[in-house]
Figure (cartoon, chains in turn red, orange):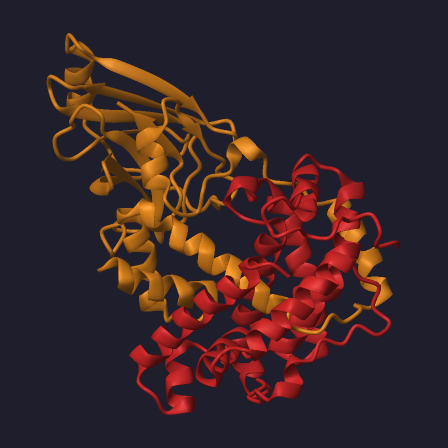
Length: 196
Length: 233
């Protein structure tokens, strides 16, 4: 699979949403587009699910469920409301968190929030250049956040903890956790929205 | 709830980190303030960047074959049959055409029925300003709505509407602006027919809607599922 088909993003404003276009084709029943979408995004989605669930077998099940849902409900993706990959990651993350909150998985949840966990390893994974570059930018943006905000975001997003669990884990009031999440996301959006 | 409080909930929602209570508060606030949707989209896009900080991992090759085979046997939701998950109250009130929605998610259960008075329906039909619309549902059933602004009354008749299990019921709503006003519940006869009149006084511009809720009606006093029909009056 080549990665020279996709243009590099230009400042966000002029970029074509290739994943979104594929989703629209999938909504029309296009199997080739679905296969292309899987090949493009499955490694990234699987990596995310694995990060949340840790357990390999469960992650494989969730990955299947995610892509089945993408196939079934591609018509729900509305291009003017956001990017195709955001829609896909939203489905993947919600399913991963739902699974991790079931009793058996909770013991395995990853509490480690060290800088090393922010490493983006791509060896041996054929991936779209656009995704790879954006992944690096996102990792750098996350690493640049104030540590309290980064911790709140990572515990929630990558470990699947709820806000009240995070408050207990980090020994801060719930209100503080909520504010840190909002501020952290806002800052992340600001940095990523700027030019790369 | 203030807009500032909502932005905090939107962030927690985008991270899938809200408690069930906060998730409900979030959904209710969004339904009441559809203009706050922009905070949701912004948070969701930001959360997607977090997805990209996890290392990519190649899934097993056999999974690809299994998945592609399963997909060939899996039907898709059709675009016309899909309702927005949030903010449907606003969509219902602003569209000029009737939304036709799929009942694929409704599970047929044991037969329940109860006698329903025809009086309200007869009154409406005899009103000088009576209007009606029939909505064909994707699964073959239909719902005919009747209303009269002068009488401030609304009612519906169904045909071939799936029977719900005993722990569920159909609930009627009058959607006025950003509010969904509960207007009673009904169940269908064995053949999928039912007649039901909407509680309360219909006002011109209300949207008549029906959702599937827990038996006895939605405990929260707000719809918890997407509407089966949404008919502007």
